[in-house]
Image (cartoon, rainbow, N blue to C red; front, side, top):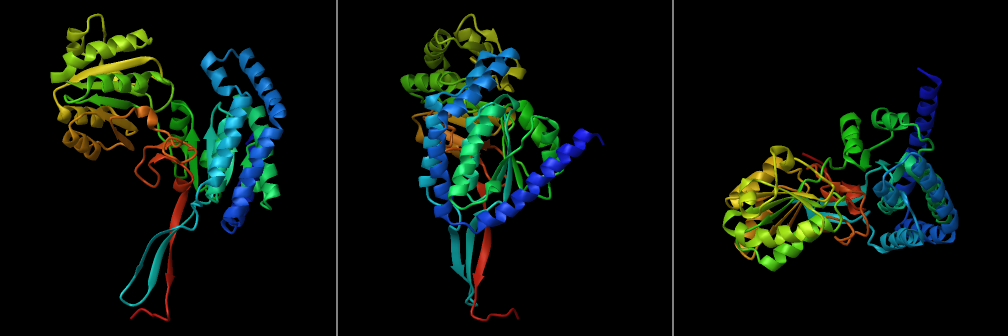
Length: 424
């Protein structure tokens, strides 16, 4: 074992032990304390914006020297507007209903026992994320709101920015009478810290949440020895039923693909009923091409719209995160559902249809975390769900599914109240 390995083990073990103690403190805290911490942190973000922006400039300069792409630089960059958005997000989360201590269900047994299922924090959450420094504030706020201690491991690109944002969060915690250990950051860029966090912190971490690109999330899912909340890919579909209104279909498809191509809720495949393809596709594809989108279609699409690149099976399985859309003509709703089941990632799917019966069948039979009728897949976002913010979209079937907000960062316990009952 090298000195570096020993240092990482010491650093991460210390973070974990302190987080476990802080989680016990948070479990006994009040909603008022947690909300006050968020409100003071929001104020601190505004007051220290110049310091945060200076740190962000350091990160940006280092990123330019490493020749990061324009898209990555944009994700990394902060300005007054983005800092205000972070602060406002903290205030919005603080104003939401307390997710801890809710009575989820209550009943009485024939023997007189009163039983309740009550929401409780998960405990200690590890969050691993990439370039966006705003995730530092969003993730910490959701964990704090839900009474969870958190260990944040941000991207090395945003190391300086995230540290200054963390200072604001600690200021809020202290002002509310809570331990600074409730929100901790991994204080090294060494990638070995990520490996240790995933493989050697089962004593302290209750769950890990990755937020970032496919390679990061795959590594987390492959290496983590604690439960993981997250998704690997967002291969999202829009299906145009034969009853789809042409104007609505056009607007939804363009928005679902082109509003923001690099987010997990962006549509990657368009499915169209065969008896509506000639009516719908020419106008939709022309609009997409005009907006700068590359189209890859099957033979049936090419027969309707000339000069379309040929799609392969690999395209049906691709999350492009770019201005590329694969298009397939299907026989009917059965084939559309079959295609999504075979090639989808269980993230988000939308049907555009005037036929309510068909729409309800799609919503029932498509087994994805989010299903929509007559709406863009880009609504796959916790903020759009009224959750204030999200850590990510979960596509698993155990615990959280869909947008992961403060409520999804809670588990539950059973509380029984008796009058002296004993079991015969």
